[in-house]
Length: 466
Ligand SMILES: C[S@@+](CC[C@H](N)C(=O)[O-])C[C@H]1O[C@@H](n2cnc3c(N)ncnc32)[C@H](O)[C@@H]1O
Ligand code: SF4
Image 1 (tube, protein in one colour):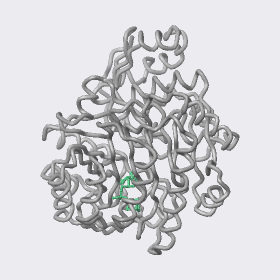
Image 2 (tube, protein in one colour; image 1 turned 90 degrees about the vertical axis):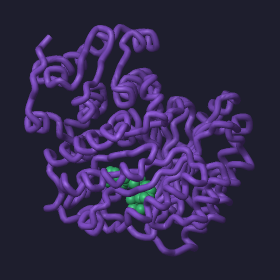
Image 3 (cartoon, protein in one colour; image 1 turned 180 degrees about the horizontal axis):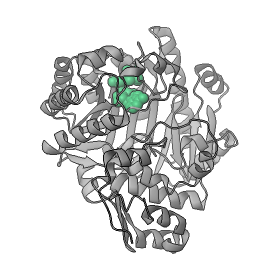
Image 4 (cartoon, protein in one colour; image 1 turned 90 degrees about the horizontal axis):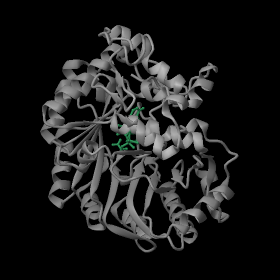
């Protein structure tokens, strides 16, 4: 075994800062294909329905925003036309009904998340109508996690009061950075005062878990400016904080070309920005969770991290075991019965399918035995920064050292994550170190069978890992 040395930041960046997935799924969405059709989805739904007692996870995508933030990588529809949003709501209500008709016995929900876009683009009455579509057809477990993404700039006191009354108990809101020069450059101006007031209002109403999103790697970010933002977020003290690496993908999202590219932080500064967030939040009593999250010790996410029972899905880190997840709305991704299924991304196609009484499936992926095994390994590393080798051997009936001989060589050979102090590997376990947390995507990538094949093609697909 080689002895770990302490490589410089420059050495680490030279080796590890390269394009790579964030592993909200394995295989990643780029492997989904249109050979997986609506008929396959119906089969998986029938299989899911047979497990009548198991609760479901639900994701609903409400894609509208009035204006575009220039960094945005989400599947959004920018419009101020309410008739467009109304037509969408009518169709997504139909999709909920279609789904419920295919799950006649499986009617319990343990986790529901509405994401976007900005779900609070809709007025409170519309959100209530949408919620009713679920509540009339499904039953929520008594401890169901019911969450929603809100943009504080368009979210009113009436919105939060309605959501709380409907049973929502989690709120996730975008901030990204409070520095005025950054906000102007990305076309998203949002004051600290209004954000803090919204959080206070939600707390007073009894929202148990509030999350704030930040991004590092945006134009004009500096250590001093970002530290100021981190201090303001510490003052708000949300239960959870996500600190995302800016995924700069102008070849996919053309509007990103309008960002002042000469002002984007380089990889070394990005790493320093992340390190300053880790210092600021762990110093204020937060626990670092997985790759890019922080949670207060009493938050469930922290307790799950402690017990190494964290999970990961398209909504990010979660305490609920994945089970079966169904998705409604354009671009929504479901994960059920060992298959991923994704809806179409364009409104006309979405409407046409539902008008014809069909699920608006665009593509999907049926996982095979190798995928399931690698998915487990990658999820454990990304979530719990720990892989129990004996448990993998028991669960999948294999000898780890034989099945993953190439991967273990890559992990532990010369100039490897182990020699760079990013992981420790023993016959019992793989553990990601504190420094390795910053590069955990690179560690997971070693176990990704598809990435090797993709490396051969020059086409850019993923954002960079740092
Ligand atoms: C749907 S938005 C959150 C809700 C609301 N639309 C808002 O912006 O306040 C989801 C989050 O994704 C993150 N995000 C969006 N584009 C990103 C990108 N290109 N790279 C990294 N994170 C991104 C932001 O932190 C954003 O808050
Ligand atoms: S408000 Fe949120 S979803 Fe809408 S463009 Fe901005 S970051 Fe994207």
